[in-house]
Every structure is written in C-alpha cells, then in structure tokens.
Amino acid sequence: MGVAYLAFVDAQAIRSAVRGRHEQVGDGQHAATVRPFAGWRQGFLSNITNPKVLVFYLAVLPQFLVPGASPGWILALAWSHAAVSLSWLLALTVGMHRLRGLLLRQRVRRGLDAATGTVLLGFSARLAAEHA
View 1 (cartoon, helix red, strand yellow):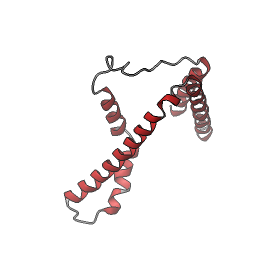
View 2: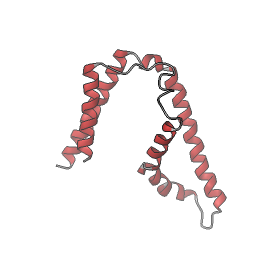
View 3: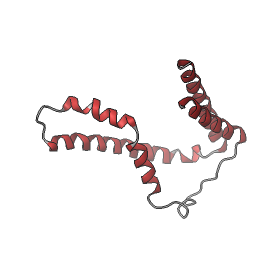
View 4: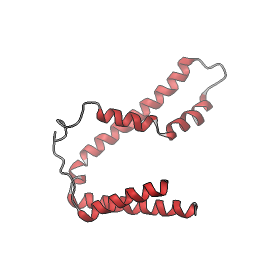
C-alpha cells in the first residue's frame, strides 16, 4: 500500500513539474475561501496521528523519569518538548516567509516538483524492492 501511495504522490509531483502550471498565490487570496481553523485542524490531525510523536513519548521521555515522578515533572517534560517544537516551527515559518518570493518563481517550483518526484520515485522503488 505504501509503495502505491508513494508512486501516486511522485507521479503527481512529476506531472506538475512537466506541466508547469501552478496555482498563483497572492497575498490574502485564500483568506476568503479558507475556514478560520482549517490549517490548525489539519496540523493537529497530522500530529496526533503521527506515530513518531507516540514513539518519542514512549521511547525517549521515560529515560528522564524516576520512579514516583510527580505529574508536574512529567508535564514539564512534555511542555518543554512542545516549547522546543514551537520554537523550531516558528523559525522555519519565518525562514520560509523570507524565501517566499524565490519559492513562488515558476522555474523554482518546477524544479522542486521534479526533485521531489524523483526522490519519492526512488523511495517507492527501494520500498518495492525490499518487499519483493
């Protein structure tokens, strides 16, 4: 199933690179068409269903807990992870906002689509070879 999904996603990316037609994004263009919390909901659902988060909390955090640790200490560890994640995502957002003009160029978008499609094609081929 994973191979088929990766093949579908890489085909979409390569098709987008070949066609070279991308939706033009302008300031405030989507403000009227997107519901206020749609982005938040999408991010929340993506994170809550991400197995890496569960693995992190089950594999890494217990190393820092001692028997009889107070709920306050456990919450402090969880909140520190949230604060570090928030800091990283804010820095990433600011950086991407500064690169927005470059990333919206037609040539750059086509190049990124082609590179993404090629990398995903390689991943799907490797995954298929491992399970063959």
